[in-house]
Amino acid sequence: MPRRAGTRIPPWSMAIAAMLAVQLSNAVSVPVIHQVGPAGTAWLRMCFGAVFLVIIGRPALRSVRRTDAAGLLALGVVTGFMTTFFLAAVARIPLGTAVAIEFLGPLTVATVTSKQRKALIWPLLAFAGVVLLTEPWHERIDLVGAGFAAAAGACWGLYNVLTQHIGGRFSGISGLSLTIPIAALATLPVGLPQVISGDFTWWVLPAAAGIALVTPVIAFGLEMLALRRMTHTAFGTLLSIEPAFGILIGLLVLAQTPTPLQLAGIALVVIAGAFAQRGGRRDPEPVATADQQVETTEEIR
Image 1 (cartoon, rainbow, N blue to C red):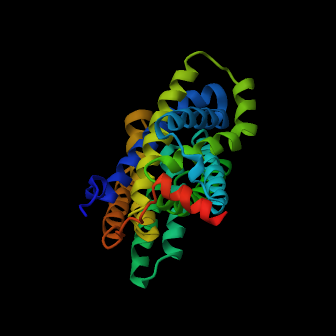
Image 2 (cartoon, rainbow, N blue to C red):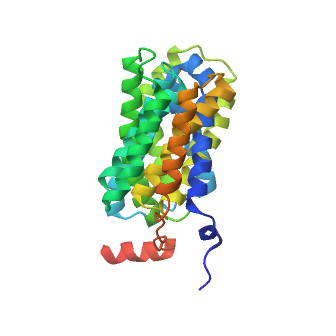
C-alpha cells in the first residue's frame, strides 16, 4: 500500500512550523492582553479556535469511545490552561524568558521517558542553552511571571503526552475539534470575568479570531501530526529550539534585543534539538475510520 502523502513530510519540520506559529501568535497577543487580560485573551482564542475547528474538522462524536472521554477531557483542560498561564507570564516577563522557563516542562518529559542514557546529553545541553537565554544573573526575575511560565511548562509536558495519545486515536485534526471546545469551557470561569471587566474595544474580537486561526488551529494541528510520528524524547528535546524562536519573535515583533550570551544559548539549543530528533522517528499508529470506530463502539456495548 502506498504511503500517505502526509507521511512524506518530515515530522520535525511540522514541529518547527508549529513552534514558529505559536510564538508569533503569543507575541501578537500582547495588545489584546492589554485590553482584556491574559485569561480573557486565552479564552477568546480558545472560543474562536473551537468554532473554526468544529467547522473544519466536523468532529464525529459517534466515534468517541467511553475510554476516550478521560483523555479528551484532560487534554482539553491542559490545553486551555497552558495558554492561559503562558499569556499571564508574557504579561509580566519577556517572551524569550517565558518560553525558556516553560520549556522545562517538555524537557522533563523528554528526560523521564528516555530509554537510552546517552539521550540525556541533549536535554542537558538544551538546559545549558536555556540558562544562557534567560541570563538569570543579570536581572531580577519576576517570580510571579516565572511561576506562571513554570505552570505553563507543567501543562505543556502533559499536553505533549496526551496529544500523542489522542493523535494516535483520531485522524487529522478531529482530535483537536473535540478538545479545543473543552479548553474554551474550562477557561471560561477565569476568562469571561476579565473580558467583562477589561477595556473591551471592537478590534479585540477580530484580532482574537485571527490569532486563534494560527494558534490553536494551525499550530496545534501541526503538533498533533508531528507527535504521531515522533517519540516523547525526540519531540520534547526538539522543542528546545522554541526558546530561540521566542527570542527571535521577541526581537522582530516586540523589539526585545538578545545579548551575545543569548545568541550562544540559541546555538546550543538548536544543536541539541537537531541531534535529538535523529532516531526519534516512529511509524504512525493506524487510525480507524469513523465507521470502524462506530462498529467497535457498538461491539463494546
